[in-house]
Length: 424
Image 1 (cartoon, rainbow, N blue to C red):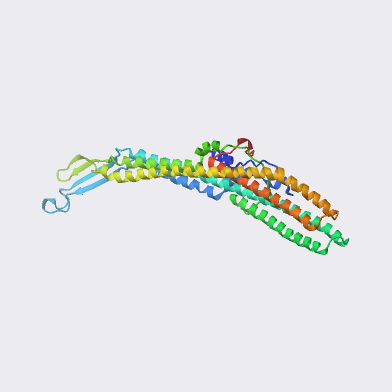
Image 2: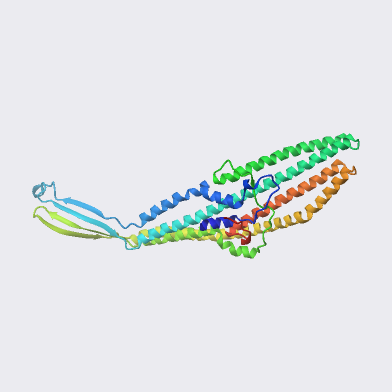
């Protein structure tokens, strides 16, 4: 559940629930929270980690085992010559043997597997956040496609009305027939654009539902506010939160694994003491005796130097990789922040200044066109200017939300908690 809440946090992009200008009914809409939950429950990429966790659990169980006991049997002085012929002078020894690890090898083995388990958990978090980020980005692409479809529907309806007005003017002899031909051509192109926009919405819906392995989605629209401007967060505040980056956390786990490998290699400097104890049967005299032995390899410290040097170099490499990655992330965060702020400013300007002006121009031009004061070309210019500005607003809003997701992915949390989408 903790991982689920982290994933939900990184996915929240200030998309508050609101109605779109769509014909979809409320029961068939999909919220971002619902898309994220379905992805976390059914995404094929996330399902495979159970097997990896089970594999490491088995490795840890093996690493915790003590050195095994061995049963040894030796039969001596048999099948010789003279007095040693046959089995009359045979000596049978049955003994147990094992090893005593003096360098903490068992703890070093267990600690290494534990570090790898922690690394896998960190990697799983990275993959989970990557998948949730990807599904959120796809959710935005669906929102954009829906908005573009709405724009095309409005443009198509407006061209139909214009064509009706043109037909009346041509029939009244107030407008040349060439204007009507231009209007027909524009309406035909708008019809094609409308069909393309509708097809794109359908394709984006399928791409979204594919995140939870569903190629036949039962929802008709995504429900959120594409134009919701997030609260301002300063760049220094974001840089301070960069330590929560999941990739840096994974590299920290990598350093822990390399450190555990160093300790494992160092533990091999002290050799294991091998012992054996048993009973020997002397066939010739019929007597029995206890035997006991110890052995220790020589030169273990020297043999471990190479493994220690390799493990130490790998640890240093992991530390260097983390430092280098942090510098790269800082540069990426600064660039994403500037792009995000620019997109926010563009949304505000287009929505609050440009579009209201162009809508007024459009209304006045349409009124003048109906009275025969403006030509179709002038009306078409006003329509195209308005449509282009609306399209620019959609694109700026998409950049604003996409860069917001990028920033949240880098800091491992949301930019402002109050905008997190409510979940049941």
